[in-house]
Amino acid sequence: MLSTGYTETEYGGGVTVMVGAERGAYPHANSVLVRGTAETLVIDPSLSLVGTAPPADLVLVSHAHEDHIAALGGYETPAHVHMKDLAALRSRAAMVEGYGLPPDTVERTDLMLRDRFHVRDRSEATGFEDGTVFDLGGRTVTVVHLPGHTAGHCGFLIEPVGFLFVADIDLTSFGPYYGDVGSSLTDFEASMRRCREIDARWYGTAHQKGVIEGAAAFSERLDAFAGVMAKRDATLLAFLSEPRTVDEIADRRLVYRPHVEGPHVLPVERRTAAQHLSRLTDEGRVTEVEPGRFRAV
Image 1 (cartoon, rainbow, N blue to C red):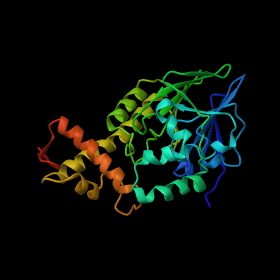
Image 2 (cartoon, one colour):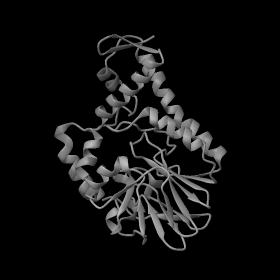
Image 3 (cartoon, one colour):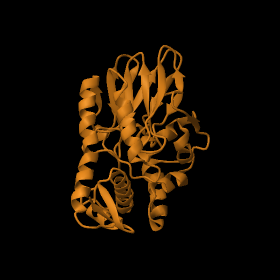
C-alpha cells in the first residue's frame, strides 16, 4: 500500500508546495497550490494528495506521467496540459503507448496505472500552449514549455511571487530522463538552457530536491544535472572502442544500474542509446562502420 499525505511549505505568500512522501521521490511527487483573490489552482496532483486533495478551481498538469496525476480523480474541474501531451491525459491507453513497452507487458502496465495510480481517462481535458497565462486574481501562472522529458512537458512561472516550477527537470542524481517514445535529448538540453534564462526567486522541482532559492544556486545544480548527459556520452564512447550495436549498448546500460529490472528498462536504454549515437555521429565523434554497428572515432 502506497502512503499518502504531504507536508506544506509556503513561498512568498499564495504559493504552497505540497511535499510528497519520501521528499517526493517516485512514485510520489511534489504538488503546488496557488491561491489568487479570484481562483485557486493546483499543479500536478500527485499520489500523496489522494484522499486529501485541497480544493481548487483549476488543475494544471506539467506532463502526462502517472506520478503527476494520481490524485486527479479528486477534482471534477477539467485538467489542462500542453497540447502535445493531451492525448495521453485523455486516454490511459495512449499514455501506455507513449511508454513504448513490449507488447506482452501493455495490459499489465495498464492495470498498474489504474490500480496503483488511479489513472482514468480524462476525455474532458483541455490543451494549452507555451505562454498561456492563467490569471487567478493578483497572481498569474504562465506556461513555460520545456519539452524533452515528454513532448509536452512544461514548467509554470508564478508571478509576482517569482516561483518557477520546473517539474521533471528535477535536478536528481539520476539525471535527465528522455527515454519515452516522444522524448528528446536535444529538446531536453534546450529546455535546460531556457530555464537558465528565467530569473526567479525560487525554482521548484517535482521530486526529492524540492525548492532551490536563487538563480545562482539553481544554475549550479542544473550544471550537475546536465552533467549526467556528458557522463553517458563518456561511458558510450569508452564502450565504442570497438564496434557495437544498439542492443549491445542497451545491455551495457547508460541509464539504469545493473540491478534495476522491469519491462521498461531495455526499451528506455535502446531509445537513449540511439539518441546519444545520433548526436555523437553528427558531431563526428562516432561513425557507423557497417549497418547497425558503431565505433568511436
